[in-house]
Every structure is written in structure tokens, then in C-alpha cells.
Length: 48
Image 1 (cartoon, one colour):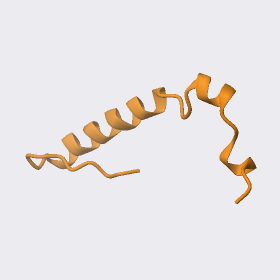
Image 2 (cartoon, rainbow, N blue to C red):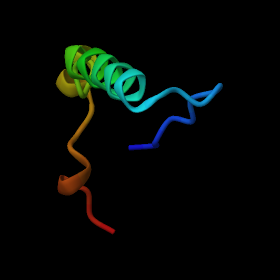
Image 3 (cartoon, helix red, strand yellow):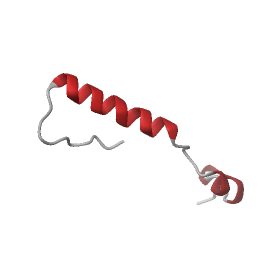
Image 4 (spheres, one colour):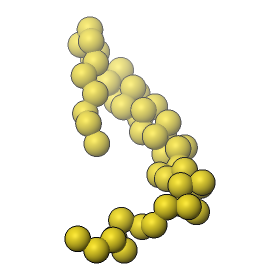
């Protein structure tokens, strides 16, 4: 995960609120699109 750079520099309470909102937004997104999971092989299954 890339740490976001927030400008102008927020105070600690603002920073925590922003980071919590970003984490909640990220948690709502599926890790893999359903169509790709159904159609594409797992990378772990691929041979080198």
C-alpha cells in the first residue's frame, strides 16, 4: 500500500480521520473484479 501524502500538513486528528476514510474506501472495493476471477487463472497456478 502506498502511503498518501496529504497537503497542506493536517494536524494529527485530521490525519487520522483522512487515513481512516481512505482505509474504509479501500475496504469497500473488491480485491479482484468478479469477471477476472472467473475467467483468468490464478497467478499461483502459473508455471515459470
